[in-house]
Length: 66
Image (tube, rainbow, N blue to C red; front, side, top):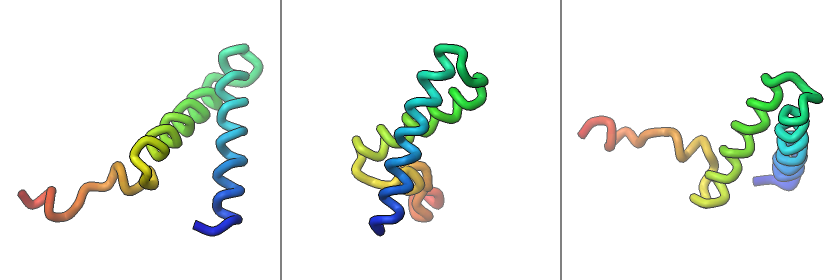
């Protein structure tokens, strides 16, 4: 990944945490809290697996044909 892509990703991580906390504190609408929670779960899955989330949810063509 590029540095610019990492910067955007890190910024969205911070925003998602604030959106999630803000939602629980009823500062933002629940929709933004849900978006933040989903984004945070996706990032945690990426950190655990060491792969981008898009690779985690895509099936391999060989696995589908079996």
